[in-house]
Image 1 (cartoon, rainbow, N blue to C red):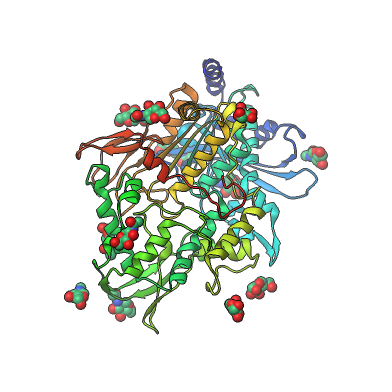
Image 2 (tube, rainbow, N blue to C red):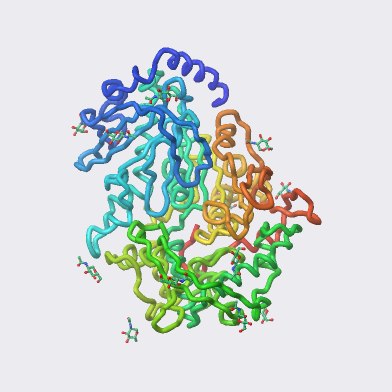
Length: 589
Ligand SMILES: *[C@@H]1O[C@H](CO)[C@@H](O)[C@H](O)[C@H]1NC(C)=O
Ligand SMILES: *[C@@H]1O[C@H](CO)[C@@H](O)[C@H](O)[C@H]1NC(C)=O
Ligand SMILES: *[C@@H]1O[C@H](CO)[C@@H](O)[C@H](O)[C@H]1NC(C)=O
Ligand SMILES: *[C@@H]1O[C@H](CO)[C@@H](O)[C@H](O)[C@H]1NC(C)=O
Ligand SMILES: *[C@@H]1O[C@H](CO)[C@@H](O)[C@H](O)[C@H]1NC(C)=O
Ligand SMILES: *[C@@H]1O[C@H](CO)[C@@H](O)[C@H](O)[C@H]1NC(C)=O
Ligand SMILES: *[C@@H]1O[C@H](CO)[C@@H](O)[C@H](O)[C@H]1NC(C)=O
Ligand SMILES: *[C@@H]1O[C@H](CO)[C@@H](O)[C@H](O)[C@H]1NC(C)=O
Ligand SMILES: *[C@@H]1O[C@H](CO)[C@@H](O)[C@H](O)[C@H]1NC(C)=O
Ligand SMILES: *[C@@H]1O[C@H](CO)[C@@H](O)[C@H](O)[C@H]1NC(C)=O
Ligand SMILES: *[C@@H]1O[C@H](CO)[C@@H](O)[C@H](O)[C@H]1NC(C)=O
Ligand SMILES: *[C@@H]1O[C@H](CO)[C@@H](O)[C@H](O)[C@H]1NC(C)=O
């Protein structure tokens, strides 16, 4: 049905576009006239007197984290801002839109994700695709760069629930709803003109995308999410886990020792996929066949350096850069160092030995395990990542402080308890793991979900666990073959070999998906369903080559250093990616 209506839509668009120019449409009165009448959008009162509209010429387009657009073209568009209030609430939310030149508009709307605790502040990411786009203040000045963790507490003990729900899913949903409702009228098109609606984002932008699929499913046609930082309670506390391992085992490895363990693991596991190319295409084979203990005794050396840390870039508060001195590190890998790495890769278990969470794939960098050098004592000490520490202080303990100062009396059970508190408290706002996607699926939505296999921030297995949850919840009574076929018809998942967090891994320089939006547009608008995902490299072994990534659950396997890999089924591999979390009494999707 969707496809048969396409030519009609295109014809309408062509007619309207031919008759109007940017200066015709980019006026306050045209934007005001495009607003739906009060009461049309339930709970949203648009304030016509607040509308601004101004043409922006020759600007560059900037998409959010996870965009693969490499467009360097400059764009001319109409910048429209509107303030609305929630009915009866008296709050104000500002939304801003970038409407392409009428001759460039292809009846599309594009929503971009942000990262860390920030929503996207840029509305122009869709211009490269002939799409209007938008961004939102979320009611807390997010358009001016205010990040949600700065406002999550009104004060100690007092959660800002308005900001929490707006950041969680509501602000993007409303921005999209308003934008795609006014777009046809803005361009003089019939109000029932189909506006194809896309989402693209990675990291928290991936979580935001999943929030849209889960909460506003019928409002999106094509959603591309990378490395979603969802299952928020577990994900955020997991950022404290590496420090808790060091604290529990009372061993604080010099960073060079940890780096050596990672490098040696990559070297040992690279060939297991059938090709020695510096990239682990099969972390599952590494997990099943490689023993980290074999690294004990290998020597490492890192020269002294003065390094400037830019912070984690996760929280605005962690932004301040600092310069620190790191002495030369020269030694051999210890059993203690390997025990730390092994425990981190194994993932969090409670004191009864029950699994609470999964972890990064073996061979991933161990960024969260970085220790800090104390020049007065000459020793390496605990350095709690603010990504996790800030979550615990603000979201769990409800104290307006930026990080945990120590892990005194903190055990693995404490981490599980923190996860439990966050899970229950934010289950309907931040957790973002609703596994029933029926509204999205039944309205024709398509989802491409990808994850760097060696992501050191959001574990790639975390994505697979959600994919498995959706599969089992939506297709409970079917054979594996049937559920797989049904799911892949609208939800496809791809692991990116060697990939880091939302980008190429400097330790395993491989490919990255190059053209997700065009793949998605082809799928949504022309019915061309992908079965593999194109990925390219800008440097390293595979530069100037397009690889076609294997769609999960098939896995890549080179035979005898061949130039291309096959996509194979491997039950032992699949099982190695499959987890249950008995440390919690409720199902963790
Ligand atoms: C829209 O309707 C609400 C009541 O539903 C009213 O309070 C508000 O003033 C109206 N807004 C405008 C702009 O007419
Ligand atoms: C935009 O760029 C075009 C092409 O370079 C140029 O002709 C035009 O004058 C520019 N417009 C503005 C408003 O700068
Ligand atoms: C868009 O309009 C708003 C409101 O007038 C303004 O604050 C903003 O700077 C404009 N953006 C651009 C890129 O011109
Ligand atoms: C690990 O490998 C990277 C990339 O090859 C290199 O820059 C780094 O010095 C190595 N570190 C150690 C400790 O071997
Ligand atoms: C790894 O090797 C060590 C030392 O040989 C051994 O104690 C340990 O059981 C091995 N681990 C696994 C998972 O086989
Ligand atoms: C680090 O900075 C200090 C002070 O500027 C300088 O004396 C020292 O040589 C530097 N060390 C390295 C390894 O760059
Ligand atoms: C590291 O220590 C070993 C053994 O003490 C020594 O032989 C080697 O020269 C040292 N390497 C560097 C670069 O200092
Ligand atoms: C909030 O709690 C922290 C930790 O107890 C304390 O340091 C801070 O002063 C408190 N803030 C206010 C405004 O009371
Ligand atoms: C840790 O636990 C001990 C024993 O229960 C207690 O005396 C101490 O005050 C605790 N320390 C912190 C920082 O909570
Ligand atoms: C699945 O099978 C169970 C047991 O046979 C049945 O109770 C349930 O209704 C079925 N669910 C669906 C969605 O068909
Ligand atoms: C993998 O298994 C699925 C069914 O579970 C099957 O449809 C598919 O053809 C298999 N692929 C390969 C490459 O054997
Ligand atoms: C994927 O790459 C192949 C080979 O380079 C190319 O023919 C195809 O058009 C690409 N597909 C998309 C959707 O870009």
